[in-house]
Image (cartoon, rainbow, N blue to C red; front, side, top):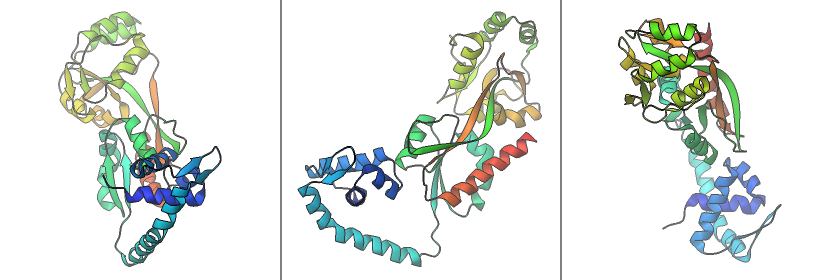
Length: 303
């Protein structure tokens, strides 16, 4: 195993700033990320490089020797980076963004070719994306979940309502009679016998909607597990079956009559959507452009 240059950059920042938090701010990393780099470097060298105290990271003798040994080389690398950066007139910033696949399709996909910077999109589960944001692997996350990481900030920008929909050929007359007459238990039993669609990676919408309205976990499995919500909507269009989905993702299909809105629940369930970013991000201008695209899209749909 070879040591990582980023470990040395982090080591130098800790040495010069004197604290993990100061190094984290200098490098635009999370404090856990800084600790991970230092721990990896100490494990590689087999030496303790700092004496840790609540307020100060005091370099050991081995730490002082390593700092003096690598300082010149790191400074040369920094100078080379600045020198060639000034000459790379066509260089573009690269921003990494995490969100669900459907949000990308709904909001950002049509604008990608016009962005004045490079863009990397990551799809996945929200807890992992927030962890990647905190560690510096992502620069922005579009999320209905707020993390607890101290280095992250969350800015609300819209809402999504989770609703029950059905394919346009689904006979919902009996179900609607139960719901209109307040026969919730009958509606629950009826729905358990129907065809259901859900996604491969996340069945939280179904579980939470069911628990919220029927005060129990769904004791049945969906008949069809498909890759994403867009697939659900395409499968339901003009056919039979039910699913629980965010309203903004199915609005176009609703307007076209391909699917129909069945029920918003006895107590409608809304998620607040947030922009998740790190504090003091170096990509403020790029993130502002991305945020503006999301806000404009939701404003248009709200009209």
